[in-house]
Length: 441
Image (spheres, rainbow, N blue to C red):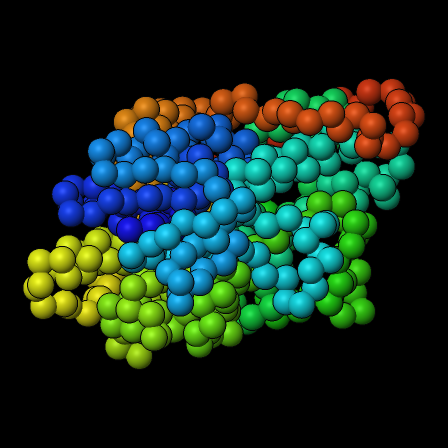
């Protein structure tokens, strides 16, 4: 059994098959670590360390029948039953493709150079560096117009990733950074969230979408729906004839399935996902299973969402199917059990749907979101580290000092023209109010 990808689905399949004496498992991944992608935005906004949300694959998969191979898969040859990797090929009896999704820039691949997305630890560290560098550049900049460009942050796409990035970035500008700088007031930074559709979080019910938009605006995020981006470059974003000057653009708009599945030469949907059968097998390839973000699965006329719990359920189902086949037992079709879907807006506030019927918002939704994410993290150390860090951040509103720029960005700084230091006034004390306080991350 060869499993390509050690994300949520692939790792779950490998762990379940690790208990089987009749199966030899080989897990192939181009990285040596499993990544908890839902919390990548917190690495990008300097809330968590990369090590808090990742774990070495070899330390997770210790079963004797399981082998881990660091390699990049290039294509699949179903006729010869081999997986072609960089530098060779791996034969298989059964194959699981769990390679996840990549960024989609809607036929504008050139935008990727100036608007990084968020899928890997490398992406998160690069975004963190880009955001922190913008504040450092603004601190050096003497021209007010150019300084404003550095302090404009545009996030394209108001799905869960875009919403969470916007909320965390707005919190950073108003609570974590103001005391760090002397020549600029980071609270004057603009965080602009652009969405081409009529509302944010379109996968959620309309009332929760409206709640999310309202709370983002209370966090001082400028939310613009129906804003179709027509151009992105190193100095700004175009929305039709309108131009938003900015040096920092982040991408959270579109995803496409990993290109590896195209080598199967089977029907794909518009996002490049394989239209799998009831057993999660590729059409015409009963020995090739496709799960997670690369699988297009429908249930009760609705698509199964591309979220971690769905991928994990697919991984477990594939493992059970393989064991049942070996035992000559009847095979059962995959059934997705919707346990819920949540998006965090800010500190102490989130929106979500639990068990496909209970709609939650505010602190209860945030507590459920936090509990579920801690439970799904790999390893006790990671769970403890994230839990303690969130607790410290929640009560101090400051967080740990993780605002590190690991690369040498000094040569890219604007020309130095240091004027007199301008003291930054402390934020005004909030007035007492019986209204709900604005949520912060």
